[in-house]
Length: 118
Image (cartoon, rainbow, N blue to C red; front, top):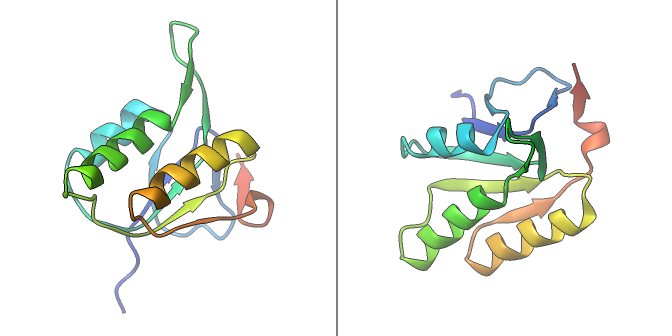
């Protein structure tokens, strides 16, 4: 049985069960990973990704915008399911509504049972 290909976009957390995944700690890292065009079975979204070197907050919204723009242009990113695990309630709603409005299969999940912070 093949393992799922998973992208975790989160600045702090890792999966509690140590499942294999590709990790992006910043939005720039997520963009670089997605630029390869490799499909994912799952993409997991945090919202707040800490601060950039300039002191400006980094979030996953530019990644969400990229996926939405691709779907708008009839070139949706190849992902089976998106999980929104952020603790930011406003960010969670923004990510979820934007991606589902563009046809992605997304669910909101509670991070506490799934992740640990190293």
